[in-house]
Image (tube, rainbow, N blue to C red; front, side, top):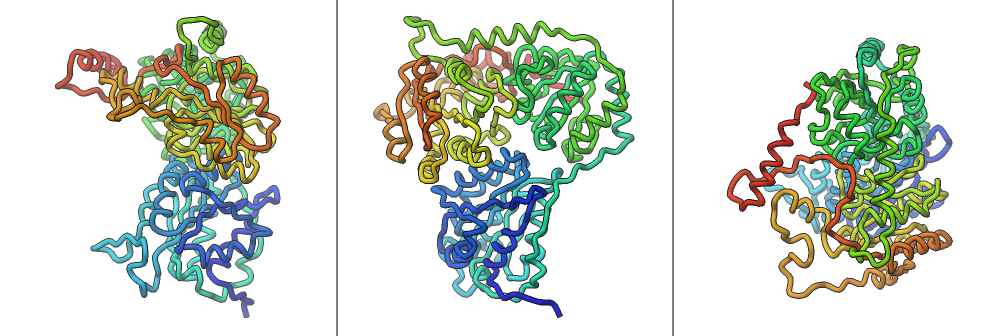
Length: 612
């Protein structure tokens, strides 16, 4: 006879999560972010209270941003550990949908456990319930379905016996990794059931390394041998495979330079002589030059986002071919690539063995040196008394760069800084964290907290613009309460400066981006320092670039977050690097500025040729 234990469904869920382990002997789900409401407080809330000594619960300020912290944690841990996030039903649940989309795009594991409507339907419709007039099985949580890798609705206690193992199998699968949503009916959370004791035995979840098909490896090895000007694009999959050193060794051994995507940047240090920096829209001049002339593009762990490929107008060699090394066939076969479906590290090792003593032709190493000199010039501190009395974003980056160490991690998500940092930041190994798959404004402050929780020995510097800070800043209070120190560099250009520049580049009139161009009665006077202080952070203004450098160093001694506000010039871009990006320009009906922009657009669109 099977031994059983009588638990509520909520108790069973948290008990099971508390014994799911990694190969290193840690819990895979380290803890649970929670904001309680009527949909989860009595069932799941009480259950979490009962296991607090083994599975901690952390209180957030906003459902979306506490999930952002969980996402940043998982990314920093290279998908080897994760957090769960629970909310009530209604707006608490739908607030999580944006975060779920962010995790899905970036292939990151997060366990979402929103409360759901009553399975027994006795109080139907319950407070905050979204009613579908044509389908009685629908709830607000069905909005998760397009933005998670696995969705299940727990409408009976025994559903956990199948749903929980499925959830963790997705979150630990390197090919299908992503967020999971278990919509937990609030009455079922409190229902008791006789669960098998064996269900709660500790389990170790191993991250597998799928071997590539030997035939695919042989095919791409032949393509590499035949190439005259190959280039490697190093993506985020390189980091998740722990393949950074393998890729660098492959590059040196076979004399093939590499460039980095947003997700792959920081995998190898900028000082590596084969590292030519970022590629595409926010790419370095030397990297984009290599890609433009390449006859073979070798993607490793990248999904070839439009920023990486310059909207597929970057690769101008008529004879170019594409190789894609990826864990998932969906990504490996994009754009007619010769695919290798397998783990990045294993695949590179097998490729290198097949290539033996093959070395590609020599390439222009001087372009890399010239690029670094250009970066030095645009990020240099402004001369005192110069015409530009406000620093540029590039100069702010330079200030942080000059005082950074090998333990500094810079992070961002949206606005000007992601592009500026990708092209200009000279990253130490492991010194870069960018959420640019979903480019989600409001990720920054919460994400910085998540990074610091995952890597407490690192110095985390969060770049955020005034526009993104205004969207989501409340987890600053959480970081203060939990004594999680990091430094926020808040650049105030009085609006959405990045998108304003794009608006101008596309021939548009300056409209509704900067406060000065918006339909308002009075210019706002926002006291970001006072605001941050009101949440308990240490906050101060930086008078200039020199003062910013000084304040960043001083922040390292604090045990709570520091916010440094500096006014910047909204007009200049990075001043170096870059490539065209496909943002559609109106074909007709505009003034001369739109006609000029459309002509420029049409000229660049002629270069948009994919590989198939």
